[in-house]
Image (cartoon, rainbow, N blue to C red; front, side, top):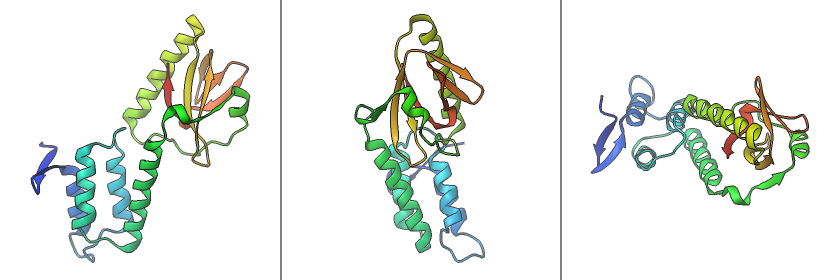
Length: 183
């Protein structure tokens, strides 16, 4: 199957276009609803990168398909959140100690949207665990808090314990809250 389609002389994501066409087809009112927008967003977030092809496709869908007002507002909010997240450089994140991070509240759901990204995170955590066990080098964990803030915690010893990462001193972070591991 070809993953791309040429539309208006631009390469587009066929799957996103198919979802948009399905959303407006049939006996319904011909507009993308909030539920349809959520399906589109899930497809956009299926990878860990918002590609240029996906950006072009989303822009095309936003401007060439009919949306309910609520769906368009919801989708624009998701895009704005994604862009503000990507605009925050890791170097400017607030740094917390292991003790300070243990006092924080974490999101109930996973901060990573795709299964591939979650598998990569576990691999990176195991690699970091080995690194800290052998050399006691500092590693950085980029963590999302329940309020949406992103923070960094550095530690020279981590262990995996079920659904948690234990930092030196016995402080824990749920794996679901970790966005990135910097070794």
